[in-house]
Amino acid sequence: MFRQLVWGLVFLSTFLEGALAVAAGEKPPLWHAYSFNGKDFGEAEIPGSAAIALRDGYLPVVVTDNTPREDRLPKGTGSLTLFCFIQSAGGKLKPQRGVIPMSGVVVEIVGKELNLAGRTDSAGYLILALPPADYEVRMSGFSRKVRVEKGKNALVAIRGGKRMVD
Image (cartoon, rainbow, N blue to C red; front, side, top):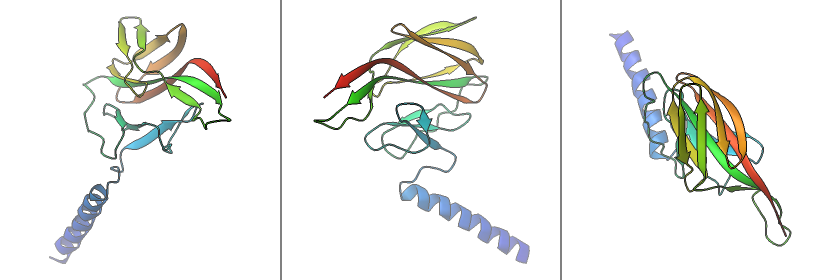
């Protein structure tokens, strides 16, 4: 009886902790938010930029609020999350963020057994579920190689140019 009471209290406190975190607008602990800082993806969110929420086994989500959807990856696939951007340098007159997302850009994904094309969203992201394999990602004359693994998320950023500003 005592053992059941203890386990009941442990379950209740765990449940309440998760429910309170969600109610407070916090991300579920299994999701990790990444932002692009101009060089690579980091787990810290950058104010004013879209973040990408990742969780193994789930399709990544571009997050503009704190509630990512939980869409499982199709069986036997992994995900590719691509961020296309232009590097921005300068900004003496007006502060610049360092990267400008490339929205609406056509991207080709080329593999041994699969070739497809997609278009980036308004935040510069393209998210795909793909069979595990090595791929070449091509965009406006630029390319990157990436490996997609079953149940895992691959993050790739492609710089599509550089812009100098005052």
